[in-house]
Structures are given as C-alpha cells and as structure tokens.
Image (cartoon, rainbow, N blue to C red; front, side, top):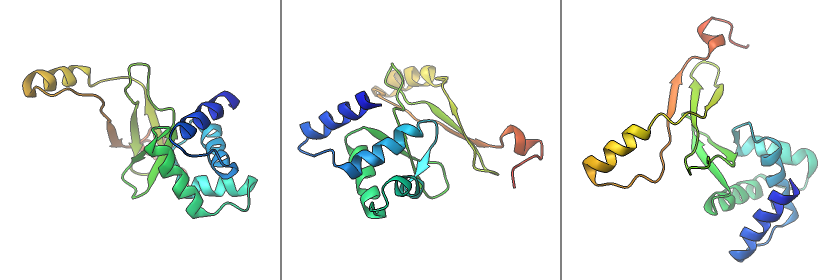
Length: 151
C-alpha cells in the first residue's frame, strides 16, 4: 500500500498538488476497499472512522481530484450516485465490466472482454479509433433470481 501511496503522491506533485493527510486517508479507504464500488458518502463514513476531522466536502473534492488525474475511476450504476474504484484498468488499458442486480443492488465485476469484435467492427465501419469502452449489464443476481434476496 505504501508503494501505491507514493506513486499517487508523485502524480499529485507532478501536477502541483500535495498529498495532504486528509487526501491520504481517502486514498487509504479506496485501497482498503478495492473490491467495492463505494459512493462518496460511503468513502466519507469510512474515512470519518479514522479521521473524524475530515468533512464530506473534502472527500468530494479529493475524489474529483483523484478522478481528474486518472488515479481512480467513477461510474454510475443507475442508482443516481457516482461510485468510485481504484485500479480498474487491465493490462490492455480496458476497464472491467459490471453486472448490476436491479433488485438488491449487488455489483459483480466481470473481467471478460466481450467487446473486442465490436471494437474492430466500429473501427472499420466508422473509421473510429476506440480507446476504451464500458459495459454495464442490468438484471438479477443468483440470489434475487431464486427469490433469496437479502432483507
């Protein structure tokens, strides 16, 4: 974790920003919850447990700063809230895809790239260079489809 924090600190410094203690707390929460897709409010609540003096506005500003420097990525899963994740790109530069349960809100990451053929067709047919894509599939998770959703 220290290595990643150092890399982010260097990226901020190269853009004339500092890694403040509050920014580091936000980054630590994101790193500790890499497998989750946290909203700003969820990040705030987790940061608040370790650093009670951090305000919600600081968390929002930090998330936007990290997003602007491509440190984290934000996405909308259709619930009206931005979600954030750290390190979402694969070695080929593409982000993973998400399966979203419309009933319970569960988000499942899908690391298969199903759109390579589509990218090639788009490039040929429209003379358009695809640099990235994002796929969100909405439906019901196994538990909800079986009627065993959590209460």
